[in-house]
Image (tube, rainbow, N blue to C red; front, side, top):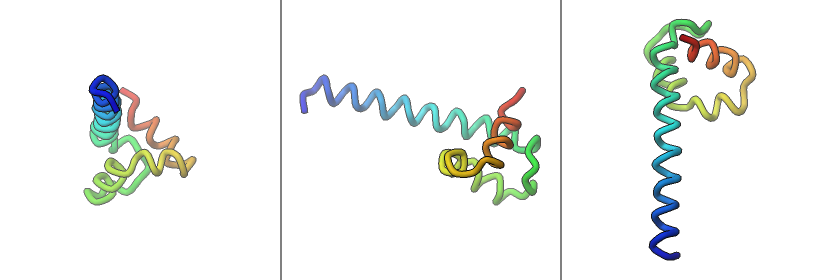
Length: 70
């Protein structure tokens, strides 16, 4: 792999990490708008694992969108 390819891969990884963290941040601060139990561990679990739940659970998808609304 060339140096330019490595830099492209690094930029993609940084971009994906930024997107992941941005959505986790928005979900964390919008969590009170969801129908989930408002316990700290729920907020932490859902904020960290949001991509998995988003892909696999329709109810979570609806609550995730609700949490991201301003």
